[in-house]
Image (cartoon, rainbow, N blue to C red; front, side):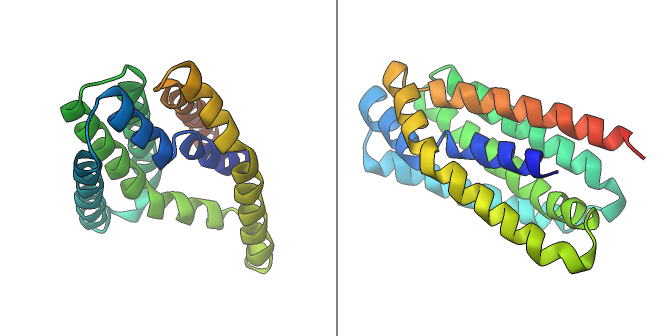
Length: 174
């Protein structure tokens, strides 16, 4: 379970906002205005996915998590192919929609696996993992982006796929 959380954090951390800025401004030759349009698409996706997730029955949790991971993989795959601006807008919408849709079901699943008296320790472990990952991922993301502007997204794609496989294995266990 902590492995999945660590991989999920790593997948998102390898494609931070600075990678998006680099791609949009220096590769697509767009401006901050276009970056703000992407942020607007992300906000609309978040609001929409929140609305949708509130209407999904709780017993569909693993399917929703799987769907969210699929959408995140699609986002990262699209971005890894150096898409034009309009496709960047769509990719970021898809990715944030998938992430937001799966989030409440994912957190519920994670916390259902641990005893209540261990919840604070688990939360502390997750926080420590995020901080540890946050120490080195900017360097890795920068190194990957210096090789190719969208290589961080390809790395994220592979990690999202790995997370999907781990979820399939977790779903099979009783």
